[in-house]
View 1: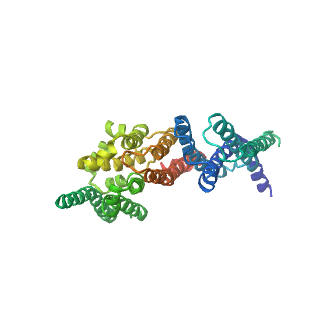
View 2: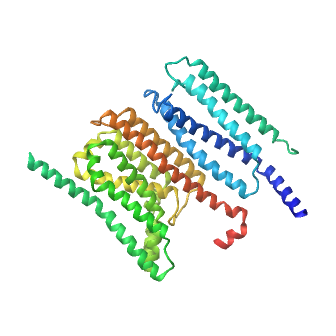
Amino acid sequence: MTKMYEEQKHKHENRFQYKQRNMWTGILFGLGIVAFIDEVIFHQLLHWHHFYDKSTAAVGLVSDGLFHAFSFFATIGSAFLLADLHRKHGFWLKRWLGGIFLGAGVFQLYDGIIQHKFMNLHQIRYNVEILPYDIVWNILAALFIVIGIVLLLQTNQKGW
Amino acid sequence: MHAHEAHAQNFLIMVQLLLALPFFIALILYILAVIISNQHKKQWPHFRTICWIVGNVCALITLVGPLASLSHIHFDAHMIGHLLLGMLAPLLMVLAAPITLLLRTLPVDNARTLSRILKKPYVCFIRHPIIASILNVGGLWLLYTTSLFNLMHEHILLYVFIHLHIFLAGYLFTIAFIYIDPAPHPYSYVFRSLTLVIALAAHAILAKFIFANPPHHVPTSEAELGAKIMYYGGDAIEILLVYILFYQWFKSTRNAIHPKAATSSR
């Protein structure tokens, strides 16, 4: 009984030690997974926006390529970081989830505001009234960010 | 006219055989080395032998036979060849650890000479992650964005040279990032990861560039299909490469947790 308590206490302390790593692992996973979902569902399955929308925007091409490579890099890398946290008995589910929401939300907002609107790289959909799509897209992104921040704040206090 | 066509046909067969020969020899030598090595040392892993065989087969089906002939005419077939010869075959052959096998099989003196050669400045230079990336992805940019792609199909020596370069650059690129065989002067995982992200991005950007700007004399529909094959097929193989890199990183950091294991394994 005491041994179990000791172990439990040890685990609890480890979580604080790897607090930041839990968050960053989640953020990386969130970034990777949202970029992946965007590519597969909207680009490939629905064909809402495309493989290549603007052949003129060289900046868009380069940033897209970098982000594409980074997205699967982040997904695989975060999976190993997660395994590493388990190995060190320092995994903290709530904080990890907070990181995922934050990472996913930040990328979606970046995509929705910077890439869709400022750089005009591609739109969510063509030949329809775009405003409802934009609103849903960006509000969802903001919601993810808020959820992420709340979870991270809740797990930020040392005494929690 | 007819005679000319027959001549061209013979020419093609000759080129195919010329390109296939090194891989055929490599395949046989590796298996011989495994047999010799197994007689003296402990069993060579079957996994590595299988990797070598499949890797060589990938290269061979690109260089001889129907796919090789098709890739002269169709850009999409050419691109499948590029994936097999430039990416999958090198990766599998790296996993087969040919240098380790060679060091095990050769007499001690020869093995020492070999490892000395591997530490030569020139070898270290070309297997620097950035240099290897430039040789590999930079070479592809040169091939598809200049008239080199057309010239390649007109000049036989250029064709042979470019195909050998595609394989060798792919192999070099792979050993620059994942260390299966002995790697003198290893680079940190962080540095390798950052360089690899940029190199893979350059590959993805090139695929999209081809999609929008087909090489000369390549029909748009074929270029688009070829670009998609390069983009998604490339992804599949790149994911494997990234996975292995992170796996090695993950394993290497275990020593930090279990110091005892670290001292016993080194």
